[in-house]
Image 1 (cartoon, rainbow, N blue to C red):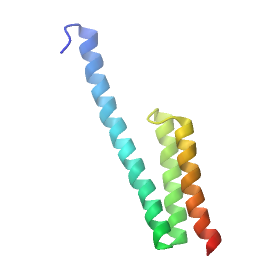
Image 2: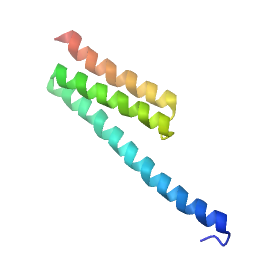
Image 3: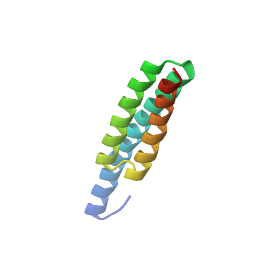
Length: 90
């Protein structure tokens, strides 16, 4: 542990941020998995709803600085493509 007071504060702050970021990323993975599962089941309405939720969460993660904007854009594109592909096939 550091001896400098400001560094001790930074260590504590960084740990809290790490835990928050970890929780947000875990939630993102869960929501994207739900989209993939809905697509695998062939349930178009469920897939579209799950994609909408996942895209919203990706936007929130970008605003919080958890992931980069381009990373979110790529993930949103993939999720939307999967859900819309199912709708078009139906």
